[in-house]
Structure formats: structure tokens, C-alpha cells
Image (tube, rainbow over all chains, first blue to last red; front, side, top):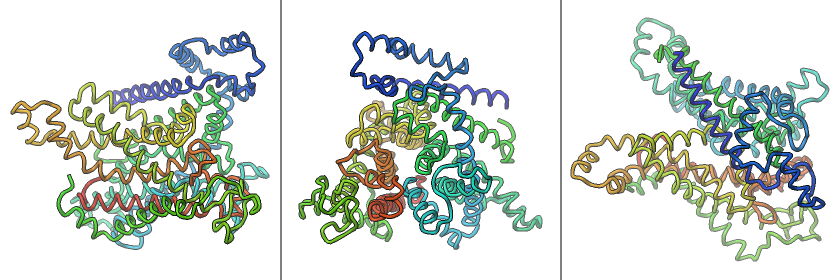
Length: 315
Length: 281
């Protein structure tokens, strides 16, 4: 198990190295991004000033060397300074991390709380009402763009029905207010990821429900809920978690758009702004945080397999 | 590749046929109507006003620059359908050969291609596309290229998985034993078995390409005004007063995106069921 874990962590670090290197190389092609992001038009600069500024930012070095410098600084816990805000990147991201974790976490929780039971019911009674609900959600999940769901939800629930406030995270700083502001964007994140979750749950449970050991469990005289939950669903968890793992990058990407539309002060919205401002150090910082989150979540889910699936005891 | 009876089975699927009819009708409408009625999607009609409500002169109303929204919606449809066809073609022309090579030769080629695919799949595609488009410069061409290239990894994975199982078949062994070259085996024995799933995934990829283009254009990084696109039209709804009080601006494009993507999805499902219902896609 320890060896397996070590192997997973090493391969995740390799992937992280490539993700950051590719994005670093791409960003280096943005000419003069530092000057633009600082708000200077560059028009008043002499050629000498320009060169001096380039040197000050280290832009006169070759790309691969700059990347290695960046990597060295990261290992020293230093993500550099944002071109746009002049503040340390780590600090900016630190302020944005909790809102994102809260939003994506509650979204995923909603998705699992609603998606899993719907998927299990659909697999238990194919063709039933649950099955139709499940295929409806799956279809919406596959086909409706996130920004359209956001706009439609705001129009219906905030404007027409006046159920929730729309913008931002902080109103009168009471807990009730925060929850009210959280529900709509979190259910949109849940809505977006629930389709895949339901489809995968249904498929995995359909496979497991045909296994002989469920008949054995019934023959032993276990009650139907016990058979389904303890012996059926527990075995189906592994393939479901694989699906969640594959979806994590898309959930993060989708939450960026949700955060932007709702004015939620999270990492995703920060990334969209950073890209628009061509704020290279900030983009790299967020890239690193997203890559660490995605790969870390993968490893954690992978480890949880062993605990949840009785067939996997050691690898 | 297309076995006899494929068309018959496809025609038997009511939803797939309905979806196909919808897409055909839509293609005809978005390409022909603007020509027939000499619609102008770029000129402002200042007299009609900005964000004018639907009227006889402007059936869908006007946008924030007083441009006719019906014309813009139709021209946005041209963009979406173009992206839906061109981007998957790019994904396939990159992903198919790489997947074939990785699955057939294994070894270094396999780890190189599949690890790169892992890298692509471990980062949110919308953010990576956004960075790519920002670097290249936003335009229709760059949106198509970026979305097409971003889709390579899923195709490569699909092809790779299928090649692995076909490679174990006896007819590949016998082709090897009579001394046929790798290229001939890939072309004659392996490619035909891989094409069906790729063919089916084309339709699914069309739908997701349209989703991605609309997302990029919504964020102002895909198709840029004055050129029309559905995502671009809807981005006006980021203004809360447009969102709440002028639904005619964003509802038609929103409904059309969803319907178009659903239609591609159903066509894909129909093709899958007609070719091989057990295919996992």
C-alpha cells in the first residue's frame, strides 16, 4: 500500500510538472504581458526603459530558465507577485480559497446527496419514475452549458420568485445570509455534475445488482434495504468514484463560470480575471493550486477505494 | 465500417430521427434565411433603439448596439454549426493517429501519448482553452483550432482502448505471420474496427464543441463582436438589468444552444445503438 501510494504521488507530481510547464510556456508567448498588466501603455517608454523593465521582471532570460526559477521559488513557498495587484500571489489566493472550497464542497455534497439515491433507485427499478428523472438529469448535465443554467436560475429563482439574493458572498455577514447566497450557486454546481454522477451510479448499480452474491445475501434472509445498501451499493462505489475523479477538473472549470456570474470571490473567478489581465504570476499560482487540488483529490479518492470496496483489500 | 442495416436501425430510432431532422432544418434556416431576406447582423438601427423589444421590424428585438437580434441569432447558428463540424474533425485527425500508434506499438509511444493525455485531462479544459485563445488571439479560427486540439485526448483514449482489444484478435496475428507491414496491418486490420466508435463519438464531440465555443464566446474570448455567436449574444445577460428585464435578448440563443446540443447528443445515441448497443460511450 505504501509503495502504491508513493508511486501515485510521484506520478501526480510528474503530471503537475508538465501542466505547469505547458502553461508557463504558453504564457511566455504573451508579448509584453507584464507591462500591459501594470497598466502602462508602453507608449511613453524609451527602448532603454523597456529593456530595464524587462530585466527587472527577469523577462530577458530564456523561457526554460525562467520556468526553473519559478519552480525553485515555488519550492521555497514563494509564488511571486501579481503584476496587476502588486500583492503576493500566495496571499491573494489564500483569501480566495475558502469561498471556493465552500462553494464547490457544498455543490458536490448536494450532487452526491441527490444524485446517488436517484441513480440507485433508477438501477433498482429500470423504467420507473426514478429512471426517467435520472435520464432527465443526465441529459441536462450533458447538454446545458453552465452559464445558461446560471442565467436561467438567477432569472427564475432570484428575479421571478425572489427566493435568493443574487450577487456576491457577503451581505450582512450573518450565517443565514451566507447560506441564502450559497444555495443557488451551489445547486448549479450540483446540477452540472449530477448528470454524470447519476448515469454512472445507475450503470454501476445495474451491473452489481445482477451479481450472484446479492441472491446469496437475500437467501440468508437479509432485508431488502440491507441487501441493496450493504452488499450492492457498497460494491458499486468504486466505479462511481472513478467517475467523480474524472469529473473533478470539469467541476472546477464549471465553478469558475458560476463564480464569475454570481460575483462569488473564489479561485475560479480569480483565474478568469487573471487570464483577462494577462497576469502571468497570478495565472501560474492559480494553475498550481488547481493542479494540486485535482491531483490530490484523485489520490484521496483512490485511497478511499480500499476502504469502501470489499473486493479491494491490498494492491 | 457502416454495416448493412445500420441506416435501417438508425431510422427506427424516433428520437434520433427527430434530432436529425431538427439539425437539418436548423442548418437550412441559419444558412439560407439571412441570404433570402438580406438580413444584416452588424449594422445598428439607431432609430429602433438599443435593447428594443421585439417588433415587426425586429422580430427578436435589438441588442446593446441596436443590431437586429434575429439576424445575429441566425448568424450565431452558422458559427455554432461550423464549430460543431470542424472542431471534431481536428480532434479526430490528431487523436486517431496518436491513439493507433500508442495502442499498436505500446512501449515508449504508449507512455508518451497516454501520459500527455493524462496531463490534458487533469486540468479544466475551459481554463486551458481560455489561456490558449488568449495567446493566439480570439477569433473564429482560433476558437475552432483550440477546441479541436483540446478534444484530441478523449479521441486518443477511445482509439487506444479499442486498438488494445483488436490487437489480441487472431486475424491480426495471422496478418503478422504472413509478413505484412505494420502500416498495412494498422490500415487494413485495425483501423476498420476503430472507426465505428470514432464515428459515433463525432456526434457527441460536436455537441461538446458547441458548448465550449459558446462558453468561450460568453467569456469574451471566442468569437468577438461585431461577429455574432450565441455565447456572445448571451454574454449581454451578465448585465443584471438585461438578465432580468430583457429576456428576449438571451432566451432565443440560450434555447437554441441547448436544443442543438441535445440534438447532437440524440443523434450520437442513435448511431451508437444502431452500430452496437453495448458500445460504451
